[in-house]
Image (cartoon, rainbow, N blue to C red; front, side, top):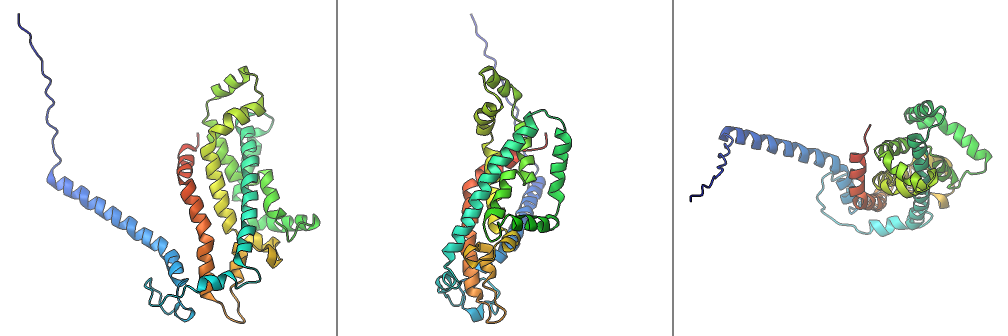
Length: 297
């Protein structure tokens, strides 16, 4: 009795021609060189600011390079106490505004997005289209009516004009972002929740909201960065130096009469960038996931 064994031989994989391999390597090297050069160009102003924050006042504009010939770390303590209040006051003020804006956007935009994505009501599509059109509306068009309204309400020189509008889902971009994300969640989950006795509130809180973590994180990160760096609105509504936020406080370093302390201003600019970098590094994973999973469906 004989047993035959059949051996399956895999044909050898043809190697790429040497000329093609060299071409691919050259193309990859050129691509990486272009990316590195672009990154250097984009990061150079930030690196120059960091280096200039450690230079003496008289050498900041005399040495445009990134090499330090003389270090003056005193710019940081000098900048911290250079204004009417210590710089931590302005950091706290910005933190209050940012925290209020983040909470307002997360609550209001998620609820508005659920309504547009899941509820059926008269005029839903035209209203959604009008909301999207507001994204293209310049802020300067509405700043005067808003200023008059907040002045009548007695909200000037407070943080309310910077926080309360966020509770009304005024950032249409985030509403659109969340609508697209919710549309990607299977409706079968809603039906299963209804069988268990959930209404719209239960579906939103127990089903939709837990699945929206990437979109919520993206909204929180963008709100943090945009609000932290916002100068125009905060300059309009905040006139008391004790209420200044970081961008307005940095503007106070520029003095046309006695001269500008550039070293101190650059030092505090570096300090103001630290929370932004930390927020991006902490939420980078959620940010990439939120952008990648939120598309036009």
